[in-house]
Image (cartoon, rainbow, N blue to C red; front, side):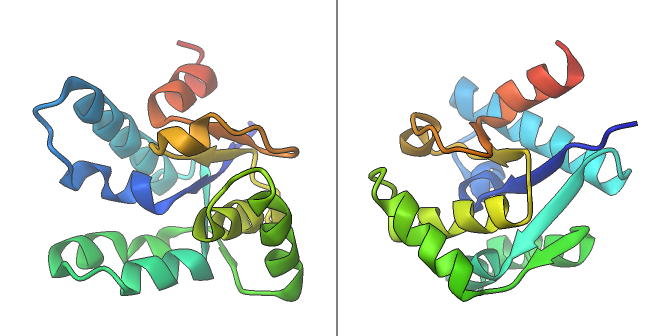
Length: 146
């Protein structure tokens, strides 16, 4: 059975801490939690990166940092910093993608992820070769055939 290889960005990991009274946020949270449950059962392969370490370590909120941090160990693969990722990040910035987001995408592409899961609307409108940038809800629909 094929295991989708995925990268969740920092926005996705933080989604459960956003205002759950908004239906879109609540649905994205449920989809993200569903994705993570499938990572735990090894249905999906999760990639973690040095950029996720950087952003999570910079989070001023202990509750968020402590909830997100363990996913580094749960992930099946780790992407360290490299010159290739830096250069790819520069290329993605030419698409109008911020430096941090470009490096996240470069990590995901470097690790041959099929999906880059994000709740960031600006990123969802970007087309990048070799990876599908997708919202958690759409990811679940697509991968689960819903």
